[in-house]
Image 1 (tube, rainbow, N blue to C red):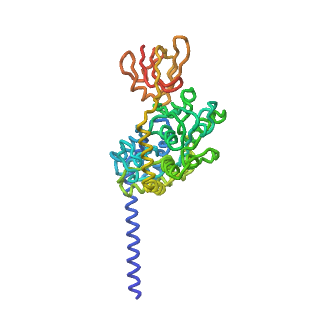
Image 2: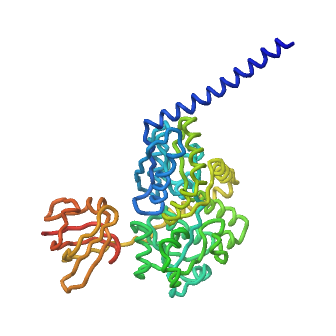
Length: 434
């Protein structure tokens, strides 16, 4: 009996040691891979916005929690409200655990609702999670006679947006279809910053969707001066700061209305999501998920996100899949209605913001570089004109003496023709003579 018992203990011990050795070998293999490999974080927007800032914070922090502590590099891949980056993630991204994507949840919804050009199924991604369940709002400039969402049901309200697919472009149209609002959407602005400048200049009444955390951090003066009126959340839940502001679900007249609104606006719960490609190496995918879940709980990460003007209210990879499966499991009647609403939206023509062009502006000062350039001009009457510029973007459409040139070649004294949306906004192209 003693001999049998001893043999049994030996077998169990060997099994345990073997299991631990297997786990150790697996961890070592992951560590070895990431010691030699840079992790790419692909952001589906241009530099400077909230998604870019959040993506760069994650890029700085997530490597600390991945075996092998890989170095990370953040790359921007703008296009189609982050649709381009999602298609790249699904079709072309390496599946070895060396790439993750950061994109807008509204683009994720396009697969469910029959969007054109969609080359991904979000259920197949290796989801890491989201560091925030977004609470965005629709708002207008005060003093326009529009104080509540009910006012937007009684008179036309002009909304500025980047594209029909963006939250700012899509959500007002959806509310028109289901709730009876009268939003007129003007698309084509280069960024949310451009459309907010258009609101400040009086070209549009308001903005269709911008996160409340961004407004609080970047537009404190608006709130202090009561410059805007918040009409409605574009989410299924309220931000604690705005208990009096309704959600679309609060205004639903029927159960069918509520179901379709919950499906469409529920994607905002994904907030600021991250995922790896479908078919990502299983063990490395698990390591990325574990690293993300650990990162979002750290105080230094939360502080960095707050400095970036954002908030942390995390959702892990399992919660993301529960949400997606809920939407894909909705009754066919609800899904068909959502697809019909989207088809009608896409078939309609939206007004487009027009760029302006001014000639004979004499360059006085060039300040800064990269994404934070500022250009100062004077016209023939002596009036000062100031524009922001992004060195990389302006450099693609800059000519000096009829030849393509780099932005650093712009010198005070040159006389330029500038293409822009409005004074104080971005300069999109320049044609200068020395």
